[in-house]
Image (tube, rainbow, N blue to C red):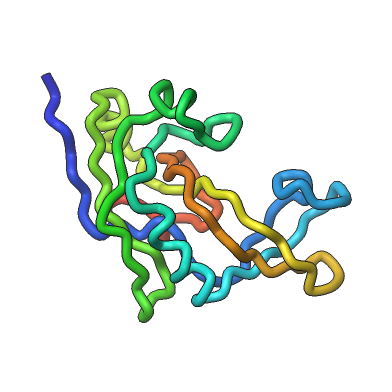
Amino acid sequence: MMKAKLFRAVPFARTGWQSYAAGELNLPGDGMVRAFRSPLEVKHSAATFEGVPITVDHPADLLTADSAERHTVGIVSAVSFDDASGQLRADLMIWEPVAIRQVADGIRELSGGYAAKYEPRGGNEYDQVNIRGNHIALVPAGRSGSAQRIGG
């Protein structure tokens, strides 16, 4: 039987600009848009990620009480905002053996699953506001790249 693994102070989200397909955010158009996450918005979102599930890849929809059991491989705790790096960090407890093996095999990048609102800036740019955590996914390649990953 494989024991659970605890990974401490892992960066999983950041401030700054991110690119998305408009459809990913339910915004008009079919091209790419850029969304800005201010340090204040990311800092305010920290508490909403406390206790959210860890998943392998993102589920098709945000997790609900009914779907969480099928997708949860661990849990998030000790969420904090690091002012110096502009990142959210958390302790990740993973207990599901397949997920632990995937981390050992190099699937270490992270991607936050969340709900947010998008306020237009003009053109194809938006401010991402009211970020509310839903889960953190282990993914082969996160939108933020290797900056948000287990094992730095």
